Amino acid sequence: MTVIDRRFELSLLPERFAIVRLAPDAPVPSWALQGSWFSITRTAEELSIVTAARNIPEGVQKRADWRAWKVHGPFALSEIGVLSALAAPLAGAKISLFVISTFDTDYLLVSAEHLQAAVAALKKAGHQVRAAEFDS
Image: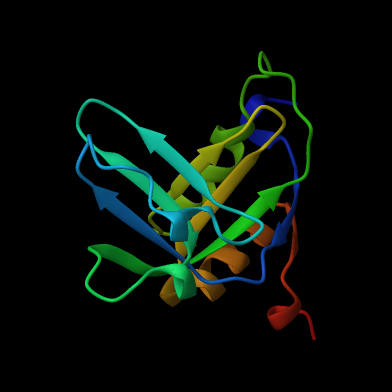
């Protein structure tokens, strides 16, 4: 089995998310820490926050309406090909992807507009995708 032929199980998180870009020296706002799932990354160029869209106040620059899947892990940090096996079918379907990796696993975010097409592409590639709103 090649790296790209690997199959994974993914579960759709129930929230709708937004991606926020703040100045690199901005303090982490309290709303960014609300909820059970969020990601905060600071670089020399920006403070990037992913959190439930409902937590973000009006007037904050954001890209809203993203959905997220948890890739069932955990995976060793040295494991090769996890993202490749998941990104390739989405790229083939011309679906943009935003990825957040943690110590144990990865989370894939796609625009809610492309969610149904992403589910179809991942299932076609042999991945098990749990998305209650598409399971009928």
